[in-house]
Image 1 (cartoon, rainbow, N blue to C red):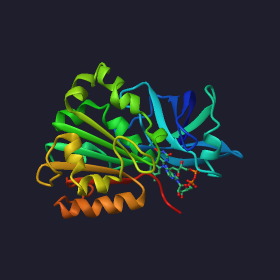
Image 2 (tube, rainbow, N blue to C red):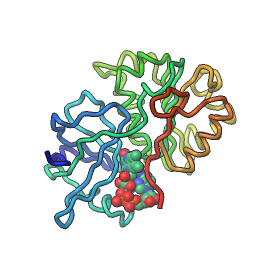
Image 3 (cartoon, rainbow, N blue to C red):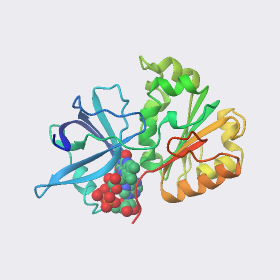
Length: 257
Ligand SMILES: Cc1cc2nc3c(=O)[nH]c(=O)nc-3n(C[C@H](O)[C@H](O)[C@H](O)COP(=O)(O)OP(=O)(O)OC[C@H]3O[C@@H](n4cnc5c(N)ncnc54)[C@H](O)[C@@H]3O)c2cc1C
């Protein structure tokens, strides 16, 4: 069996000069849990050029969706950003990743903290009914530099709540908090600042995040996952290790060089 499926691009959407999304067909052999990532790429000079990509679509959907950065001169993304509908990409069969709700101990609220493309796995998770079965409140915080980078804002502030499968649960339980760091916006500041100042509690109308009741997933840069990890440990949350449920889970959104 070939290591990669050839999938066809169905649509492409450019959010900004740094960020875009695309949808592809999905072969029946591609299975994944909400929150996992797959290897995705293009054939370049007769060889696969592959990178890890979190799946942004729900695991029951017939297409696959990805949210991508555009790295200037990036080996893959300088090519990937030129994709047009009808063109082909390679997608691996083996889903990987730690951001799965089953890896967490039971709790009352789950906080999904993301920066940039770290939003991608959470787009899959908030479209999965299981997260609403396990948690009373699902708080999704997306922190970006500029307003334009608040990808999927319309979904998260509107159309998701009309979704046939998860709309009613999302209306009752999902709280979306977009925050911007380099432009004036209704909510500004890093996630650590929102937590330390108590502003997140005011914005969500929930008690301050507490390890006794709350669970967390982090997806972003090394700096973001490090700073937030430390803050969570101070609040009594323990990192979930493979096979042992914990209070929080971490996935880096990319590898820094
Ligand atoms: C577990 C995992 C999941 C990932 N999921 C996604 C995803 O859903 N969407 C996505 O766009 N990328 C994701 N990445 C990053 C992805 O694998 C590639 O690095 C990215 O597509 C750039 O590829 P490139 O070949 O153009 O540049 P690379 O040579 O891979 O990267 C060059 C540099 O660009 C920067 N960079 C790379 N990716 C990002 C990013 N996402 N945000 C900000 N800076 C970045 C880093 O400084 C990196 O060193 C993920 C990485 C990991 C480890």
